[in-house]
Image (cartoon, rainbow, N blue to C red; front, top):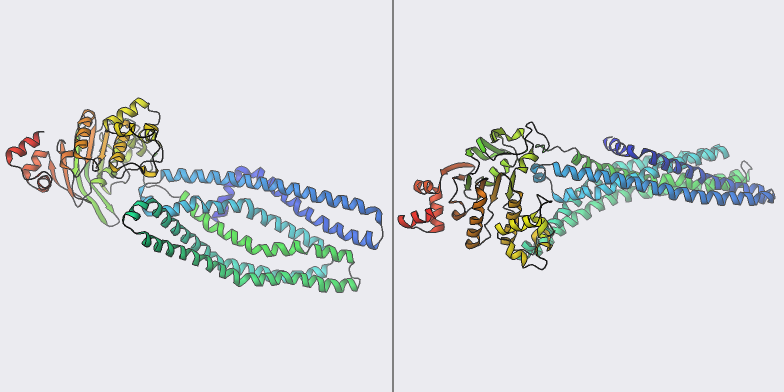
Amino acid sequence: MKPYRWILDHLKVHWFKYMSGLLMALLVSFLSIVNPKLLGRIIDDVIKGENRTILLPILLIMLGVTILKSLLRYNFQVIFEKVSQDVIFEIRKRMYQKLQLLDFEFYDNTRTGDIMSRMTGDLEAVRHFVAGVIRMFFENATLFIFALIVMISINVYLTLCLVIVIPLIIFFAQKLVKDVTPTFKNIREKLSALNSVVQENIKGNRVVKAFVSEDFEKKKFHEANEAFKKANLESAHVWQKYLPVLDVLGSSLSIVVIVIGGIFVINELMTFGEFITFNSLLWAVNNPLRTLGWLLNDTQNFLARSEKIISLLESSPKIDPEKEIIKKTVYEGNVEFKDVSLKYEEEYILYDVSFKAQKGSTIALVGPTGSGKTSIINLMCRFYDATEGAILFDRYNIKNISAKQLRNNISIAMQDVFLFSDTIENNIAFGVPNISTEQIIEAAKIAKAHDFITKLPQGYKTIIGEQGVGLSGGQKQRVSLARAIIKNTPIMILDDTTSALDTETEYEIQKSLKQLYTEKTVFIISHRISSVKDADLILVLDNGKIIERGTHQELLDHNGYYAHVFINQMGNFNDEEEARYAKE
C-alpha cells in the first residue's frame, strides 16, 4: 500500500539506526524466553533433583538477562524515538515548504482547520507508527515465534491445543480492523471541522463580540463538538463488540494450559518444571494476540492520517512559482492586458478586459463592489492565471515569467491588511528583511505612520498583536503602505489603501506618494474619487467588464457611472466649481 511505501522511503535515510533498533528488539524477545526456561530447570534440577550447586549460577544468569534486557530495551526505545522525531521533522518541513508553493486555489478550497490537523494530529499518528507500532509488531511477532518454538520443544500436543484457539483470535482481530477502519476517517473529518470552528471563532472574536453572537458561536461549537464525540463513540462501539470476544479467547489459553497441562503432568507426559516453563511462556503467546487488535487499530489510524499528509505533499500548484521560460529579473513596469477573461467554475469574473499601462503612468480602477477590480490585481500578480487572453509585462507573457520574479517586481498594499505578530519594524521590512532602520523610518514617514509609531511604548520595536490587534484600521493601513513603499519595485499596487483614513491624512499621503510615482507604474483601486482623479487612465468596471475609460475630466464629460459617483461624493457643483476642482 502507498502509505507503507511512503514511510519506508523516509526510513531509508535512517535505515542503519532503525535496523539496529530492531536487532535489539529481537535480542530482547529472545532473552524474554531465557528466564522461563531457567525457571523450569530450577524446579526440575534444583528443587526436585536437589542439585543445589547450579542454583547460584542460574540465578546470576537470570539477573544478568534481566539487566541486559532492560539496557537493550532502553536503547532501542531511544533509537526509535529519535528516528521517529527525525522522520516527522523532515515530513513537517516538506509539508510547510509545499504550503508555501501552493497557490490561492488550494487555500480557497481547503479549510485552515484541515491543514492544521495535518500538521499536528496526523503527524503525531505517523510518529507513533514509526516509534511504537512497527517496533511492537516486530517485538510481539518475534516473541510469539520464539515462545512457540520453545513450547513445541516442551510438548507438541499441548502446543497444538493452543494453536487451535489462535486462528479464532486472528479472525476476530481482522473483523475488528475491517469494521473500525471507516470510523477513523470519520473521526478525523469531524476533528478537522471542530478545529476550523475553534480557529475561526478565535480569529474573529472581535466580530463575535461586536455582533453579540456568543450564543450562536457556542451552539456552532456544540454541534461540531457533539459530532466529534459521536464519531469517537461509534468507534468505541466497534471495540465494545469485539474486545470481550478477544479477551475471552485470550483467557481461554490459560485454561487450556492449566487443565490439559495438569493432566500431562499427572500422567508424567511432562515434568512439573516443563509445565511451569510452558505456563510462564503463555504470556509471550497471549500478549501479542491480545495487543494485535490495538496494533491493527493504530495501523489503520496511521493509514487514514498518512493519506491526508500524502495528498498534501502530492498537491501541485497550478501556478508554479519557480518555473520560468524567460530569464529576466528586473522589469521596467510596462503592463498590458489583451482580451483577458477569468472564469471561476462556470461564471466569468472578468470578461474581455484590455488596457495598457506605460512605465511612470498611474492607472485607477473604479467600480462597485464585486465588479472585478481586485481580480485584475490578482491576475497581474499571478495569484491566478487568466482563463483567456494574455497579460504582458514589458511585452513578455507573464505565464512565461517565474511567478517569484514577477512578484519581486510588484509591491502591493492589500485591501485586507495582514500584519504579523511581530515588531512594527519587522512588519514594514517584511519583503526586504535586510533593509536599514533609516529606510524603514523614511518609508513610514511617506506613509504618514512615523508619528503614531514613535508614540507607541517601544516605538518601531513595539510588538503588535496577531493581525495587528492593538492598532486602528487606519494605522494598520499605513503600516501596510509603508511595507509596500520600502520594497521599491517598478510596479506599485494600492488596493483601497486609504479607505480607513480621514480625508486630510489621505491628502497628505497622496502628496507624498506623487514623488514616487514618476518612475513607477502605479495601480490604484479606490472608491474615493479624491484618490483616483489625478490618474493618467481611469478604468470603470462593472460585472467584470470595463464600461468606461479615460481621464477624470473625460469621464465627467461622458456623464456616466463615474460622473454619477463624483456627484454623489462631491456634490452637484456648477461648471465653474467643477472645473476648478478637476484642476486641483
